Image (cartoon, rainbow, N blue to C red):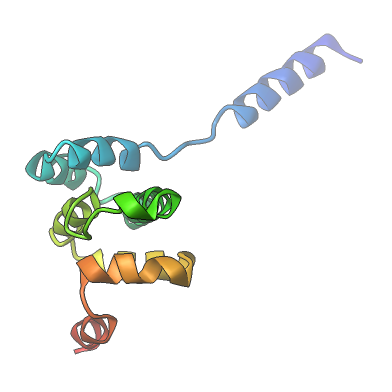
Amino acid sequence: MPRVWVSSLIIRTYTHTFSKSHLFLHHVLRYHLESGQVKEAVTLARHYQHLVFFAHALEILLHTVVESEATTDSEDPSTSSPPESGTLPAVIEFLDHFDAALDVVVGCARKTEMTRWKHLFSIVGNPHTLFEVRYN
């Protein structure tokens, strides 16, 4: 096997293997939102809103928070907090700054277990009203 061909194959394999991208935005945004820094999260997110995966990152953010808060509440129901506490209200306030907000909520609801919908829609609002707002 020629030496040039082998080194070429190694370089192509190396660049192909390590050229993947990973979403990081939802982690940084969640940090700001958990710290009550909605304005800072919005400012940061505006720098990325032109990217193709922006709405997907917001959906992952919302889904992660819904799952996290629902899991925390289900572990010990006696210590469950009212819906207004936690990070979810800050996430919804944050999402309202972007045109994709309703699509993000719908996408998240589709991927979330129905048992978690009560918690999600207690903050987001009535799903029927959201549907009317979305399509009017």
